[in-house]
Amino acid sequence: MLAALKKQTGSTMHNTTDVDTAQRAIRAIEIETYNQEHPTPLRVLPPIDTVIIGVNIDRELRREKITRRLKARHQGYRSGYPRAER
Image (cartoon, rainbow, N blue to C red; front, side, top):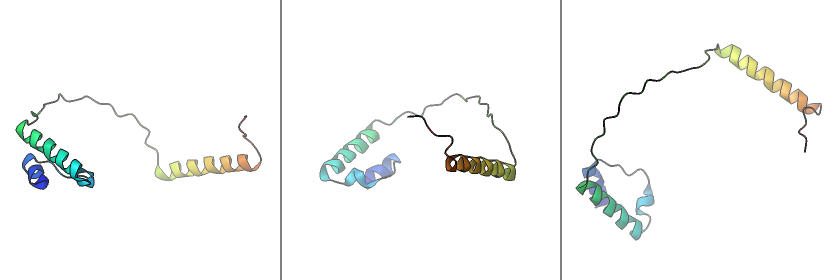
């Protein structure tokens, strides 16, 4: 019954917790019945002007910088620095 209601409302069963227990299955059927009887109106949202800010760096250079920082951090820990104050 729930699968048929979801199909009618265009909803999908994205998890199985809707039908774990009889109580949850009944509640899911109630919700789908309500959704069928009270459809949500389609909302038209205004477009959002966006600006994407970022740094475009060569992949190899980025990997090299990361490796350099990791090695420096590793060396610092091996020599006891930087050590967090407690």
